[in-house]
Length: 216
Figure 1 (cartoon, rainbow, N blue to C red):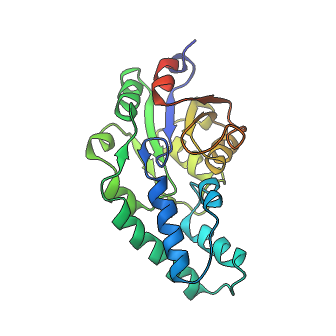
Figure 2: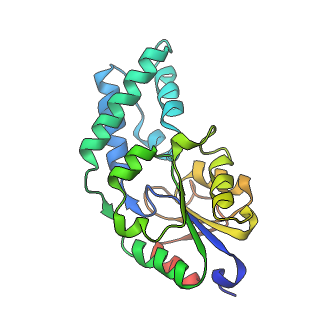
Figure 3: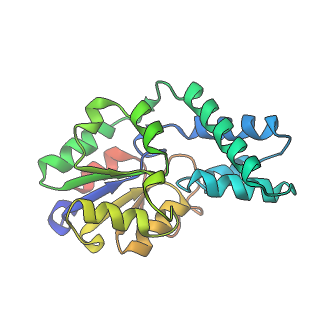
């Protein structure tokens, strides 16, 4: 039985699943950290993919041994977002991203996007032709608790009028996998930036979106 017969909705992460933007996120965090005199571990950024930026900023500051203040968090986050806007003006769309979204729609599945990226950033970088294939989207600044909390995926399922257990989530990072699993979704992890060990909590790991389409 294919996924389209077993489920009614597909909830896609963005960074590392549909768009090749994580490199820009990583570079932006590293540059912003350097500007503030703090060192940020690159692998830690990848592991935190999907987390609300404010939460990441607080942890990066604490991990660097600096005093945590609202002003410092705001400065780090605003600097990171400024660098990201410069680095991700025309992000590469992963091969088969459009086909994956279109095939879901053709099979009668409801499609939503679930990202930790802010609405403003998402609007500026997400291609219009992909937006047209979505039924709903949930951005990081629109939920109280970001990934790995289940709230983002629970919200997306509600927006497409489904229960999370009726949905498949397509993720590529531990926080997103935990978020979707906690909500009650079936989770497929796409290999993009991290090892299978990092993706181990997913129900299944696939090489890319072409393989996902084959499962529909």
